[in-house]
Amino acid sequence: MEASDANVPKTTAEKIYEQIDKDLTEAEECLPLRWDSDYTGRLTWGAARSLHARTYMMRNDWDNMYTASTEVIKSGIYNLNTPVDKVFTVEGENCGESIFELQCEATDAMKEDASIGSQFCQVQGVRGAGEWAPGYGDWHMATKLMGEAFEPGDPRRNATLLYFRRSTDEPITPENTNQPYGESPVSTAMGAYFNKKAYTDPTLRRKYSRMGFWVNIRLIRYPDVLLMAAEAANEKGLTGEAAGYLEQVRAHARGTLADVLPKVESASQSVLRDAIRHERRVELALEPDRFYDLVRWGHCQRSAASCRKELPGQECAAASAPDRDRQIERSTGAEPRLLIPGQRKQPAQSMAKGLFHNLLAIKALLLQRAANFLQWHCKGVAVALHNSCSVAAKQLQ
Image (cartoon, rainbow, N blue to C red; front, side):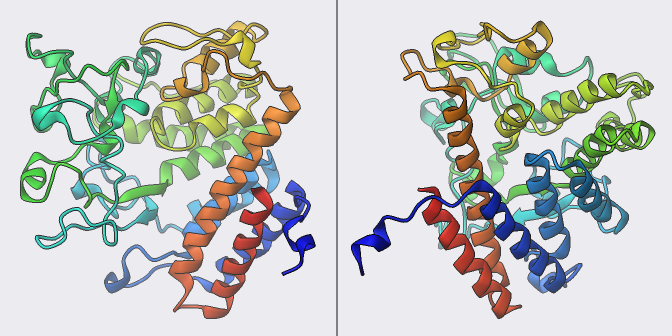
């Protein structure tokens, strides 16, 4: 190996996206619409196409984002038949809205084994003591502002936020008790809520362990695709179509409750833009993409010097942001880790480049995982994915 081999200039974002587009296009051409039940969880055309829509979303490429997301919708493969309070339960695994879901398992012989399971729930579980010491979730907690973001009566609030008490002396009340298991955890964590999307069945905890290694990881869900289609359609001026996709998500959340989550009737592009952004915030709360939404919408363009550490219920205002954007910006739900006092100040361009490279690294990781899934089904494409993602990852270091 020559010394020059270790001094490779960074590939431009444009070139990396060019490779991502090529890889995903090949995957879309190769992958089946569905697998039979013996291969549940394997990557499908819908997963590759939805991931492609996400990459267009990060580029604000509304035309291609619209095409990719609406193709997934029109395929008729996915649905919203599973109630919102069931989606993130064992019962809701691989349900009709699951597009890309990492399969996890635990057995009597392998109760906490990362070779068949995942630490997803462990690292987001309640950080407490005794029976409430299953995890390290105090780093990824929702703020009070996240709780206030849900509209009155929205069933997704109770399906997203895990309530808890600060001490055993605090009485158990309906407000700090979680359904469907009737548990009221105890923790001294500083956040307002834990992540209920990582909440496990106590019966399975007793059978296996407190760590939840058996819980599948939902990577792409159908409501996300509907909201991508809504956002792209709205930015293209197709406000009626955008409102229709938005209403599908709200109707699913509404369920049989006729008096909550009213239909957004406005045909105004700006009103719909705010409504769609709000819906992404509450529908996808405590899932991985909120931060990147804020970046691409321009709501994270604030200097580190203007930020201070956010405590539960307090606000961190961006000095130059308008009131509306500031409200969105500081109410990210699980992003207070960004607000670090004394953080080295960086030019906005440098910060944006760093955030963008982090995004690409995550996309490379997903593509690497896609290559693993593809390996036996389409070896040639898998090798191409593996090689291109390895190169992309090196260039991003």
